[in-house]
Image (cartoon, rainbow, N blue to C red; front, side, top):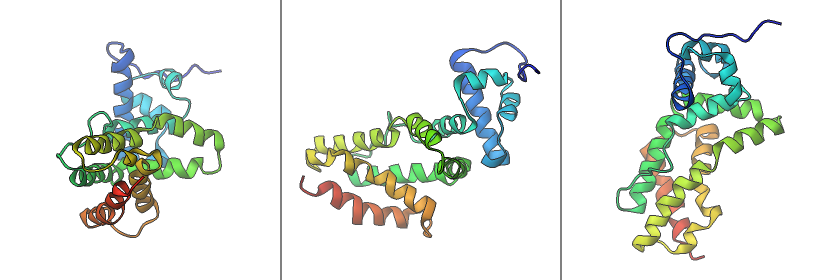
Length: 199
């Protein structure tokens, strides 16, 4: 049996530095060859790491790519803060769409297609998401509650999941561009009425 490929060169990296190098390499591979052609070996080679170091952290290509995608996705710890819920929601949708319209979006399409008939893969991907979208929307809405724009009932989990679900639907199935015309429509016609509705 052949030993795992080892592409290390230069000083050995560990911990966060190694993880960052691998995720950056995965993003570069996505941009260059697309999700269908990304391999663990190619990512390891680009990162100057061993394949074993990848498999110790990510059990599959999909898991690695999900973490790489979240590296460029809007950070739930630093959501938009324009001072008003409407413009916060618009900016959140713009930021998310910018990610979806690049290599990360193509990767998400591939991951969803791969996991459609694989319950274990679906659970793995869901676990890696760690509720990022809900955390981001929760912070936007919590600040709106503090400002008196909406009632505390807006923080109901089902309501908080709607912005990301709508954007995913339009990204995966919609025939309308992910642009400001769509975002204004979603915010003004769906999200704000939903969040302002009585509990």
